[in-house]
Image (cartoon, rainbow, N blue to C red; front, side, top):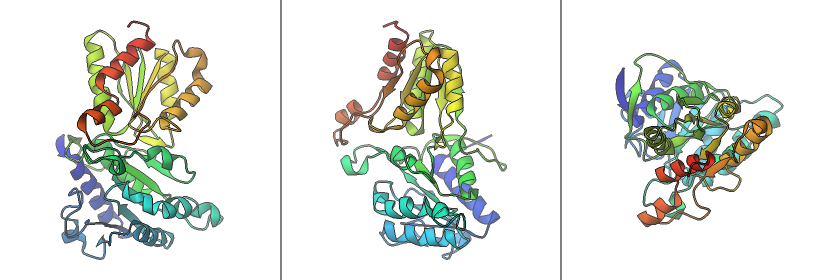
Length: 326
């Protein structure tokens, strides 16, 4: 199996779907002439032309609205935001139009649209460019929210999202575009709403998603070296949430640690914690542990960034604490 970069997986998924369906088109800031801010649309303008790969003004609310209208009229837009931090300006169209249109129209208008771009911190970008928005959008009925952690899942989930009849948000990461992973040559889809158990163990269940999965897997390796083997679940999709996979794992391990880069209040880990105690309370041998970003805006200084995010040592300590072996 070949190995490609995350950005190449994005480009392949979009290109394959545009070849398959002439209704699919891409628009966003710098997606055409510049080949994408992160080179995720490299070569697409040359192949598909300026009517299907469209550079937009720096006006997220404006081009998001255009895309919602296009989706309501039979097209299938892919909207690239240079960052989800900028997409705050487009939240009105995403939340008040795309998410609600099917219900408000009495089922007359589907909105088959994909909004995608980098999410979360990406190094020393400070407070206004380092925010994680998956929990905010997962709060909204009518939206599906996806957070891939590797090129294979990114390509398969993006293709599924483009074919979906409802609005799908894909949260990527600037720090992942250069990551390499194995991706098949042939056609494949990854289903939306299905988590992936990437490690097997019986000591504890670790649940996470997105780029921090790399930290989680490193922690799992360190634990394994100490004879502690854990289940590691990559959610892949935030909404709909595959709670069945999580509960099945907790019933086996009897312990749960959830790791995410979002703020702790009203977070994805809060929701998972509630659902697990609702469906598997009698199986828990220790309190559920959460590791989140600190409840503060992001700093610029690297030591403060490291202090704000869960690290390998934090995950190892949380697992041992839940096992009462510290």
